[in-house]
Length: 388
Ligand SMILES: *Cc1c(COP(=O)(O)O)cnc(C)c1O
Image 1 (tube, protein in one colour):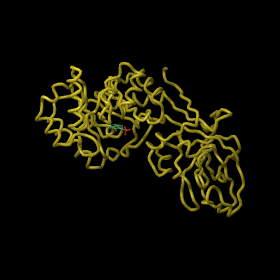
Image 2: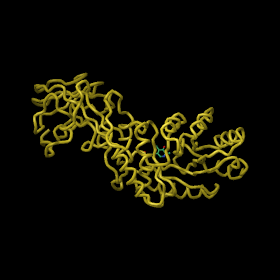
Image 3: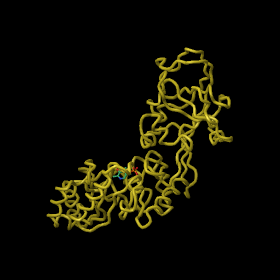
Image 4: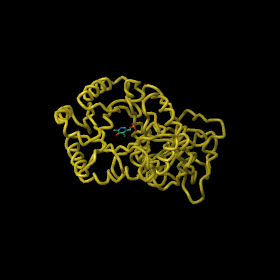
């Protein structure tokens, strides 16, 4: 490395982070930032309702803290993936509307009813199944109809929508509260699939009973008002993600992961670092060993064999490269060029305001979504802010 890493003027935030003696680091989750993000997205969609996607344990951040914080801010509609997740959210919020995105699994109707949740019915078979349950219990049951506008993943395709439209009796026992679809390429505003899916969704809706509509997730809502309809369903952006390539979403980071420096050592030119000696020092080097590894969610793909780029961390404000293999509990970082000498007890930012979810994702050859949902359980979690 020839260029000296840039350093931010002290104090760098990580330098003020306290890590408990028995712990390797800390995962900080800022509930005020989360709530501000939800409010900013809600303002962005103006007349449409802004829900919140809290599937997969609120993208790994913990539904038990995320749902009450958002509900206190006024969020009334939550989306989960599975019936079990719906039960978890219901236990936290007795009044919320809860949609189950994965739809109606065979045998899951009682769980969905117990959670007073709304399945996003995604095939004619699911519609028939839910209608049979409505007849069984003698009540109209709320549902969303998930139509396929081109993602070809879940949702009623055009021919099933036509068959459903030809059988109005099937929908008599159901209360269709939402017609929804999902975009395939909303992160790229230049992708023609967006306009094609918008047109397909509009056409599919015309075949179905009039009901509020939802098409956009985090990126879709950035595509503009044509995509907002009645309800938007952001997930990633609430948690500070910036996946949209057209502009910055009006959100700030929610998650920071800090890890401690355990040791710093000198390695001679040619000295091998880490498992399988995948990296050898090209010069006399200072190598810091940090207490964070793939068990904490850092992708092993962030490993950096000799000559290949890998991940990085921030120490004293300087971005410094991971060298050698990421192991379960440890990483090794080349701190030779850090303008402030690195020492035992220093704290590194692994994810945070400087090393964003997108940067951490790119470093690990993946996306910020996967970084979030893979955060490990070993680091203590500190929630800051929130009304609860
Ligand atoms: C996960 C998901 C969302 C939320 O997507 P983000 O990109 O995280 O905003 C919305 N709708 C559906 C159908 C989903 O599966």
